[in-house]
Length: 112
Image (cartoon, rainbow, N blue to C red):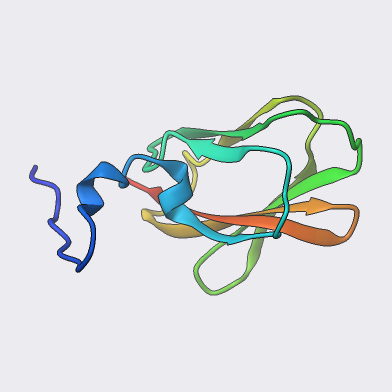
């Protein structure tokens, strides 16, 4: 199956499609931690990577494209596995919070 081609002005988008930064919707200015989700798109599992976990109050939430909460849990390790096997193919959002402050939002794509 061919992947869709997206045309944009000013840069070659295909270089960025597999980079989680291309799927980042929001990032707190001055954020010192690298936060990424891979693989993206995914079929069964995504890994939420949070570099340099110092604060033990990190939480992620997974929402559908209507904003409904699907899953929420504490981030305990540098890599957190999140199952997407049970989700319908669509676009979802993973938000990462430090205490109650959103520090990053990443769009993920669930494939068949």
